[in-house]
Structures are given as structure tokens and as C-alpha cells.
Length: 374
Image 1 (tube, rainbow, N blue to C red):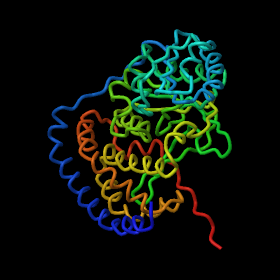
Image 2 (cartoon, rainbow, N blue to C red):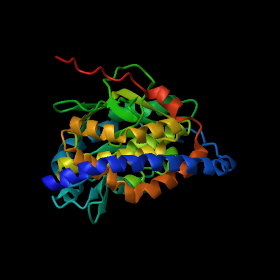
Image 3 (cartoon, helix red, strand yellow):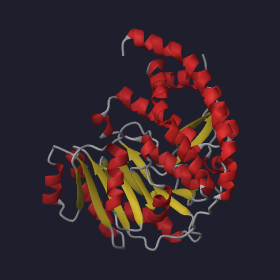
Image 4 (cartoon, rainbow, N blue to C red):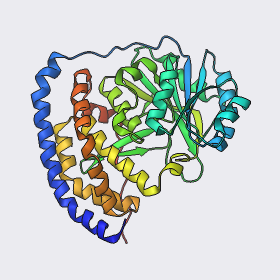
């Protein structure tokens, strides 16, 4: 992006911010007008345990043969150690590095779904979910190595769930280098923005997580399908797992952290090959804004988010180390998808049993203290 474009986009930010406030007020009017229909069509989600603890483990791959060489032997051990009738499905996103041939030669026990082109994360995993036949779905990134008891411990909470309200279980994530993921996902609200964080976990049981990560978690298949899985709104990737879990929480279900289910992750090992750093950050940014519109129905949270949009755009750009112009581009990129996000927002409200505030009370953390000034 050249200097002129950066300056122009930065100057557009105040206009975008004003329009965001106007749009937020319009959304609240639509929410109010839709309320009678929401109440008329209200439907209580089913609280039922999965019929079995059998799992379909879905691994998405794109030109990741080197990652698979490390993952597959460890995954075979984990599957063999977990009682039940499990299956492993590798969805190949049109790789040209010999991944499929290697899998067929070295790991014939794996079911392979070969796609003609790279459909990226959401659509690729959707193809895997379509091929899955078990009562639990485990999404596992290809740039992982799992510990022997990974699957045993990941499905254990479903065995212990008496109320049938468990939606997903999230594994503990260990990382190479700086640890930006832990598996224990929480949130705090600041300046009208939901700040997603991952905090160090402990062995304490039944620790709630805001979202179960889309690359290291197990999901109740029936509940997953009732919501619709990873939504096309967020194609190609990012925030889809937060949105899915948020919808589960709003329906009265919950997600838990499994400290003894351990994966080792090379963060963005595949996505960094498909997108550049700034493009990845814009995708993430765009989808966070779409998520807020699609998912958060609390009027005060919505209005505050819109009012503080310019402030948060500037702040996030500084934190990410990218020009503000990229944040403005991300905001503008939401425009073609706003009707879809609004439609999904209204369609989902009839299933809600838990408010945004009640959800946040379950998974919020105290905001970190600012660094000391000199």
C-alpha cells in the first residue's frame, strides 16, 4: 500500500465511524421490530448427550506434508489409546506437494477427502464434517503434534456431562517459541470492544472457555450441526470458532477446557503460507467486526462498540504494528457481508436462552494492567 492510499484511508476513518453509529441504531430498530416474530417462533434447543463418545477427527491440509509427517504418527497413537470406534479424515485442500500420495502409502488407515482446489479453512473443514460419521467431531490443525492421551482426555468431559449441555471441549495448546495460544480462551470488555485472550490453564476441572478453537477441540456433532458449523460469513478463515461457540453459549450450552489433552502447535503454520501478515490481520479484523454484528445483541454493547470504533481502530493498529489504513480497509471489507450478518443475527435470536451479559459473566477475565510509565 502506497503512502497516498494510507493517508486517504486514514482520513476516511471519521466518516466510517459516524456511519457505524448510524448503522448500529438502525440495527437496534430492526431488533425491536423483529422481536414479536422472535417471541412467536421461540424454540428451546435440545439438551441431549451424544449417543456415543466415538469421534471423527478432521485434519485440514494444504501443502503440509512436512507437518503431516510429524502429526500422523502421534495421532495414530492417540486414536489407538482411546476406547471406541473413531475415524480420522484428512481433507486435502488441493495440495501439489504429494501429501495425498504420502498418506495413501504411509497411513492407509486414514480416510482422505481430496478437494480440487484450496477451499481454505471454513469450506475445507465443512467438507470434512460432511464426510464425518461419528457422534463427536474433532477439528485438528495439520501443524500439530498430539500427546498420547490427547483424544482420551478430550472426549472425557462428554462422558461426565450429565445434563447434556456440553457443546465442546478445548485441548491445552503448547507452542513453539512465544506462546500466544493456550486453549483456555476468555474475554474482557474494554472501550466497547471484546478483547479475546488466552490465559495459562491449570488442571482444575470444568473450567469454562469462551470458544473451543477450530484446530484442537471436540464438538458434539448434533449441537454443532444444529447451529450450522463454521459459518460461511467468515470465509475464508478466522473468528468462525469464536462465533460458533458464542452461539452455543447463547443457546444455553457451554464449552470447557481440558488441561490433560495436549497438542503442540506451530501457530499459523499453514495460513501464513497462503496469506501475508497484513492480509491475515485484515481478515481477522474484518471477521471480528462481522462477529460483533452477527452475535452481540445487547443494545448498550452494540452502541458503545460503534461509538468507540475510531478509537479502537487506532489502538488495534498500534498493537498489531500495522498502519491504521489496514484497519479502515478491514472495516470497509465488512460492507458486502453486512446483510448476511444481520440476517443470521435475527434468525438466531429465537434459540437464545442466555444473554450476552450472562455469557460474559461466565468467561470474562480482569483486563491486564497497562505497562508502567517512565
